[in-house]
Image (tube, rainbow, N blue to C red; front, side, top):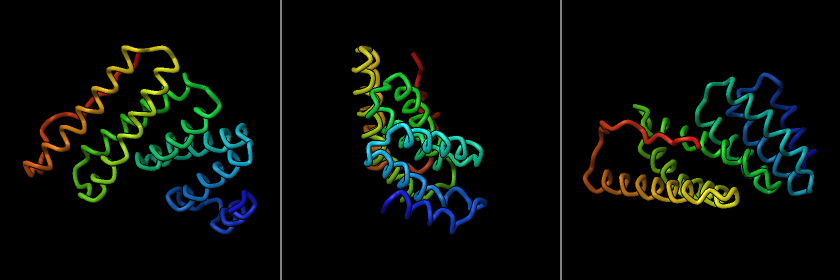
Length: 169
């Protein structure tokens, strides 16, 4: 869909539509702008979505918005910004994963989505010439995958550990 079509869909939803309804359209609209080579507009649109997601206090929506903004900033080679966005998204992953009452299917989809985020952060840290941080993220990604595997194999339902904390350099 074009930016114009997505804008029309957003108008139909109205300005007071809940973010979870508007988010897919906003993300696709920013992607359409990026695909058309208008990265500055795409970045501005996603920055606004991030602010709306922060205000909505939905960790899932904020995570989605942060990842999309990181993707756009990465294309623009703004690696310092990308690093902060990805670290925040990974922290949100850990918060969401540890929330009580989440469905198993949601936890599975979240775990499957974490690997690419760790890889993208590793690539970003390599671009920023931070080899120690690259190694740390690689180890954290492997540790998270191993923990999820053990929990699955042993049928652990209750987790007593705290979420893995993603440190900042």
